[in-house]
Length: 321
Image (cartoon, rainbow, N blue to C red; front, side, top):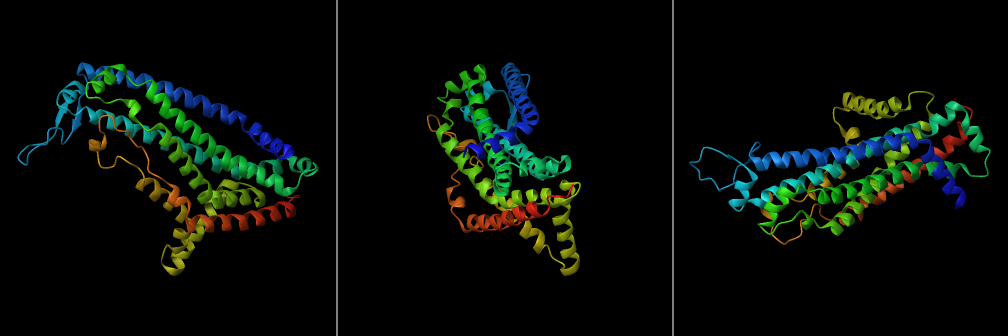
């Protein structure tokens, strides 16, 4: 176990510069968000910026359209929950954006994981250590998938708490008059739901992770181009030959399933009427049902088969540079 942990630490040390950059951008982004939100809230309170909401006063059929209102006017008319709804929606968007960025980093990490070591000759050094090839390959997969998804989860949760702490006091006072508060966000439920969602991403995307690791193992150059180009060309060839997108749909089915899952559990889609004074605000629904499914079993089986092929290719492809 100690040896395996050493392999994981080695993987992260090789990407420490990238992680420092990501962490720095994350901190700058949160501080920038806080500054913009506070300045924007002050402008809203002063009436320099107005808010549009079509059913603000329940327009009749003969009304021409929406009115533009300041937060004070909205609060005075009993529509302060619209402000809290908009803020909670931005929390969801921010957490999802962080997740997408980390998914992109996973792609770049895995296609470079073995290829870089082969290109600089360090593969021979690691093969000389008293560790198995399976341990070396699995450590790269764990660092790339579990590591980056773990960071995505942590940064997403920190973002939610940071946004609550730095919520503008001027808007908070208006919400308090309607017995509303940014702390109505169900934080513990958020942590549980967001953790399960990341576990769902892990098991449904691990076949793709192993595939890009395999590409990194066997390609002589441009692993990213090869990894992305092969399925695209295969899908185009099948469409030209057969006339449908069956192959492309098969290759991307898990991505579509993840998108459908988060869309279905993206609470708040029905508007601000679900924001009630004193009631917890759920940002996401439960992803447990998606995780405990046949798709999960098939994904793990496919990933296991691809992983065995990747380890075999790693052993056979040692001299390639």
